[in-house]
Image 1: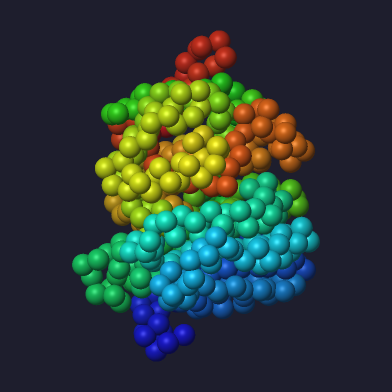
Image 2: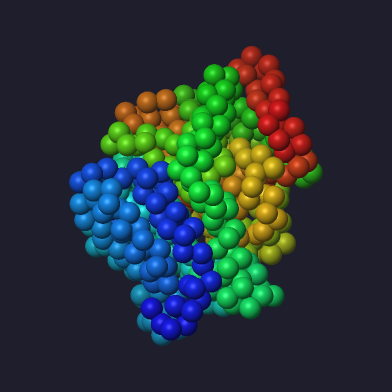
Length: 418
């Protein structure tokens, strides 16, 4: 860590940073005695990684193994790398991760890189590298999307990210503001953060139990620019907050989280919908997305900004034009109230109802852990190399749940639970 990095990290409240590390281990992962931990993080997040390692070993961790990324190293590839390198990825690393997860190693990801890092690079190279990485990552990703092990994502306020969110502030001020926003959204800005998460999980569980009791066959969305019917997968199950992984450990995959979510039927989505917030994707900002679905597939896609990037994403594979997730978030969520655009899906998706293009989660099916990939596909689950969330909720969005007999039940009115 450089002197500059140390000076910037001094802008971050050490007590709340330690609470975030504790919550990541005790709530996010619920790390078990003897369990190994594999974590990835930006190099600048070393202060948080050190605290995580401390809390992990106090919880009885076996081995804590960190992998670091660096923005300058990433940019060097795009500026000096040979052209054929953009069709390759470190498959050996992901194969190793897959083996680790198969051996019950927990997974923790710390996000915090500059969300616009690649905005000035060749979009063709960015797309090629992304696809190569997605293909190579599949053996490890399958263990995560199938919820084989307990996993968790948290965030660290890097200076480069903070300046994107607060461009008019000095760097140290921007970092302090982003840190406070992360701590508030992650519920670690209070003394007993673990207890706060217990209470929050109980609220989310009430929502999922109500939705699972309704057994809707579809959801109908109406609002400005939106008239969309999303069929729900056969045997779908709503999830939210704490969930049980296949290894039997109850964990919170995302910190923060305000959503309850399930699997849509990838062949039963019809109508049109517009985005309510910009989507930050691999260095590009995609704004004012407007798409039309027919029989589950996007047949028209436009955006006022980043349309070329959006269409490249949609052409990733057959499943990229279909939905893999639908999530409900009230407009009054803490992240929405903050009024901030974080340029990071972990936060921005928790500001509004959203949908995700691409891969579905097998855990969002009744007895999903026992279903084969073929059974999941037959019940409407989507398969893709991507999983990209974008926001469609606002204070003007209404959602009705539709039963198999066409009976309608209000679910959201003006962006809030009905």
